[in-house]
Image (tube, rainbow, N blue to C red):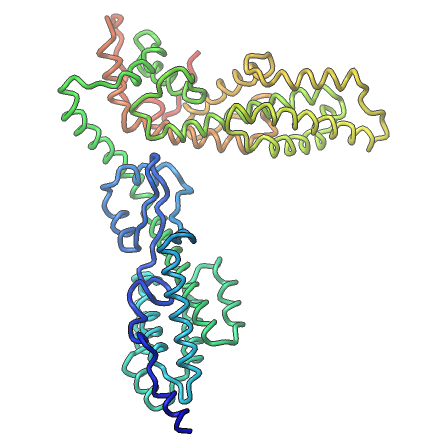
Length: 489
């Protein structure tokens, strides 16, 4: 009995040290990964830093990314598993939960660690709730009052499970629908320590949800202000450096290569179109370099569309595809799946080989289904020869499809929001085509809003003589403002 009492009075070594802002069950200052921008390393930020970033556009790359990338989101930060930080975090968290369990299993139970945990949860809740939830926050503060909880512990009346249920109920009303399943699973956990461990893990995820919710709310304002912000930064740069003779030779060369007489708007427009398939032997324009990878990604989206359109056009040389709409649609989907991961020239040949095998197998299966003879060796050889030629962009079929896509993009880029019907060969890929147009137009319009005036100055500076009666168009025409215009020949 005495031994048992002594055990109950023992205080484990360093017990009172197991709780700091970064050492408890989860980090109180949960951190997020700001994805890599312009090739720079990812940045680790707290929720307060996220809020400050969205309110103060001092980071041009961040503002640019948020404005142009509708899928841009923060990610939860976890230190690498093999890092010292990761090892320390796992060790400290393990010690925290083991101590909590050991204290609760004492006779009588000790609630020191439990009280600290409830206090931490109380601190976290305001970060998970919007500012207009004052009544909920007040209710949480009332229920999780440290003085009341301490008094309950001293009298042996503290019901730790009841507090867990209270927290779970608040979380169920506060979380986004995507977290409902996680809340339901927590309710099923019987062990109270495991319950609180899962609660803290869920609250950490909800901090991420709140950070991305703040981003969503700020996105429209950021997009509206980031153009002006980037223009101001660029003007300051020009004042500080251009006076010393610094220029943008790659940008000037890019524009000059597409000069269309005295029409600067048409010149800039043609230059933008080349960004869909920019020459590998030409230096990319300096002023657009922040979006070089984004333009390269769009370029490969265009190449995949051209390849798919070329493949389905060749496949329609067989009546079982051209005369059976359902067969054509199904084959189109299968070809799209095969080429969707093609992102460099080395992957093209492999994808084309796979596409030929898929077309051959699909055609023969369709023929067999209708009790028709399979393709003979001569037909298969002819089909293979046509498909393999697609590896050369200059061959007739991909060249034709590239011209059709170019003409389509030119019309769509100058349309006032409306998208024209897809050209022949691209009908089965209309959804991806429309998404591609939207992404390309957004990227071009944004950059034109920032740099359009400078592009005009470059062209006007090098223009020898304006034709009589001709006037330089303002930088806001066409692309930047989204005004409806007719595509010029």
